[in-house]
Amino acid sequence: MIISIPDDYHGLVATLDCMRLLDGHDVRIHREVAPPEATLIRNLRDADIIVPVRERTRFTAAIIAKLPKLKLFSQTGRSFHHIDVSACNAHGIAITAGKHASPYTVAEQTWALIMASVRDAAHESDGMRKGLWRDRFNTGLHGKTLGVLGLGTIGGLVAQTGASFGMRVLVWGRENSLAAACTAGYETASSQDDLFAQADVLVIMARLSKETRGLVTAGNLQKMKPTALLVNTARAELIEPGALVAALKAGRPGFAATDVYENEPVQHGDHALLKLENALCTNHSAWLERETYEAYFGEAFANAAAFAAGKPVEIRNQPKPKG
Image 1: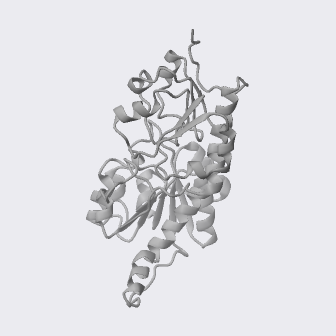
Image 2: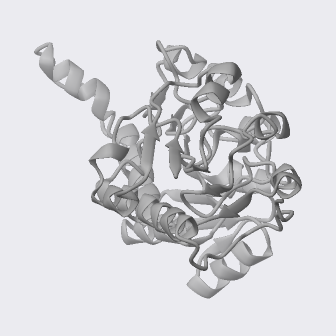
Image 3: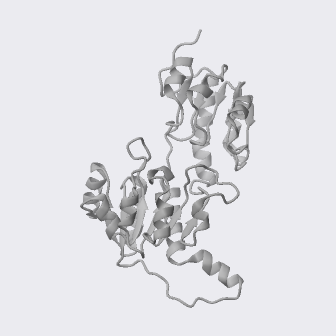
């Protein structure tokens, strides 16, 4: 079968050990960055199976209708909200997804951004190269308030690390987040505004959905201290469009660090946050670990190989029978 892998713009998939799971198949890897729809369709129109790299391409009904040979989306990771499920059902296209979701990579990246921000690591390193020596105080975390918006698995790891530094952990979110906070012995805010107002470091740990898109509003950000740090390693769309840039220009919060953007990858430095001195930006690198790639793609490739061999796989949608 022809198995196509779009959006491998890092060029890492071919280096994975789990590629051998696809031995015997015609594997076509496409590295174009956000190709035009016509190019995307040309790349994928002969595919029997598509292995999407996370949610980098949105597979709409219009695109799916132009992929006549497609039999399966073998999704990397658990989420396939970027695929039009109804269109797949109508065209007899199955969807499989993985069960793997490592919380550690994002938790580690979150703390890397926190520490780099409060210790001004990027500017310090640049200053050292220029022969400069620090002439101002560092910012400590002990005794400060760590605000956690969404205490799921990843948020729990971030909170534990903050508590180990002697930070006060303050939580807001849905009922399950508030219940988890009580179980862990953390404080809960009285409202989302209260969380933003009290936090010295605010981490966004919510999961993106229709309900949480734009969850963080300009009003929330205006409540933050001018000395506060906001960190987003979840999804850019959780923040109201344009609100973070405007808030940073207004000085509340005083600093932000992010690993996620509305349109990825960001090309040619073309993002408003990159033009601000009070923003630290990394290139959605939280999950760029070999072990994580092997786990995510290993599941997707195993599902693809089993499906191609006619073996049982867990189908996550209800495709109309073909023929």
